[in-house]
Amino acid sequence: MNFFKQWVPIFEWLPSYQKADLRGDAIAGITVAMMLIPQAMSYALFMSPGGYRNADYIRAGGIMSFIFLAVAVGTVWLLFV
Image: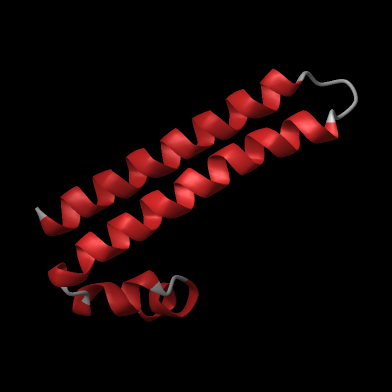
């Protein structure tokens, strides 16, 4: 377990995590997602990378955001419910 604590800090602080902090952390995460997803979409539209359509970047960002949120919700559910 020391190996994991050294390389993955969540294993060190997660056992002492307070459930009272969960609501504020969830609101902060949603707020960040609400800012970053449109920002990534606008960057994809502005940069117009060669050889790719803008929709490809928008679709990839949406899929990655969904996967991240699904894993985050699943982790919270497994650990705290």
